Image (tube, rainbow over all chains, first blue to last red; front, side, top):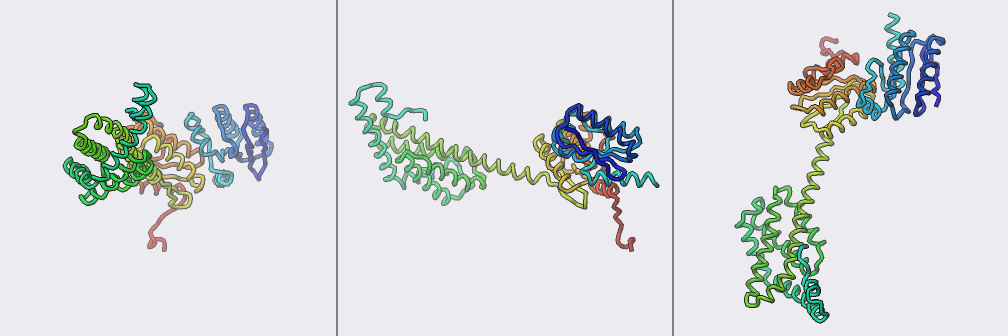
Length: 121
Length: 304
């Protein structure tokens, strides 16, 4: 299932619509990394509200996406992880240590706005 | 029921139709005789029973008139159960009796004790009545004993079931009470933990907290463990997982009031303490949370 990527101001929003295969994840990674520079985005929001399973590959890929986007000059926020998914993840040791997380899209946008405001100062 | 009914035994051993029909008629006759005997001697037998109960120091939580009143009802349902062979009424009575006496601290051994006493009292009265005729006594005991055992069983089981039901109900109530997730300020939740943490409670706590974060859109959560004396490695580990899962939902967790014992457990299981925000007490935790949320609390005098 392809993940649509929307441009919202200086941010990119990728909303996952359902279960993702490994190939989908790699495709998503490539698309995000390409667009983040092409669209001169400052931040990327990855919305996982519709995701009800997260395996180690997905978790690792998400961490890689965040790291790579940082190297491409933007920030990443993961939003909308479901409570059950969150607990299943930490039980498997997938804690997304270095990645910023937020409750939902609104929180994610607030975080990015705050961050760009700080950057301007 | 351990013993076989009278007629079954006869049919099985002697296998003659004449004998069988004869005893098929005798068994109900004996039971009727037995019931009539118990009805006739209702007052003396009841009194004897109550005397034995008091003597054995059972039901000390109840007064004598109360014991007598309950004894009368039990006696009557006992006789009815013997007469009809149906135990529903007795079962219901046993349940309602248990409901009344459990809150007063009546113990299982007391209930079983009094039912067995009644059985003994009645058996003795039968001995006294049929002492001249040993065969008749044997037959009447054959009719009496299985029914009496079943009655004792019914009452005891009813009591224990009622007790277990109450215990389950209380456990449920304690569980619900034990993990309240309280919003104290916009986007700030407090989760006080009081009492012993077992794995089941820990799981429930996690579930409530994670859903609480979602519904209240919390950004900061203060988990206060002042009321927990100690927790084992499993539960401590669970607490750490809860902290990490909350972060995945975008909330920061501050753990406050960790006792020396719990601190020791956390260090022993090797938790990466850099990932955990902690404060000495709940007050410190709330102050830290307010700073994270951008609140500043100042006295009114200073503000004006």
